[in-house]
Picture 1 (tube, helix red, strand yellow):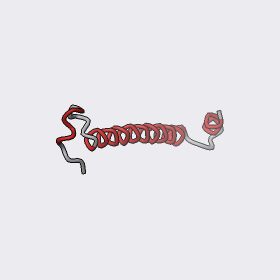
Picture 2 (spheres, one colour; picture 1 turned 180 degrees about the vertical axis):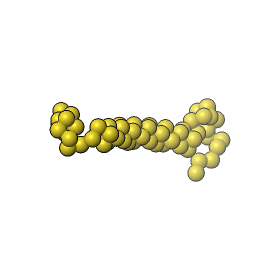
Picture 3 (tube, one colour; picture 1 turned 90 degrees about the horizontal axis):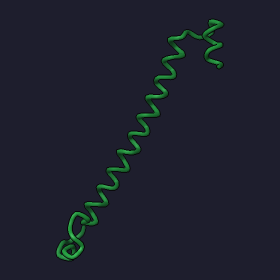
Picture 4 (cartoon, one colour; picture 1 turned 90 degrees about the vertical axis):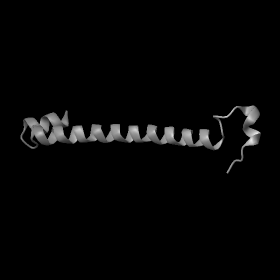
Length: 65
């Protein structure tokens, strides 16, 4: 409501108000995507380091680092 009033009374231009909103939305989406990507990378690293791609019966034959 405050932004609408600022535009209506000439304190802000519609372009400035719109740009702020879009950048904020993009920033939030970028942050969320980065979080999911980090979680995926962490899960994959654990999968590889735990030798989860090898059947439990055969993991004893592989060295872990």
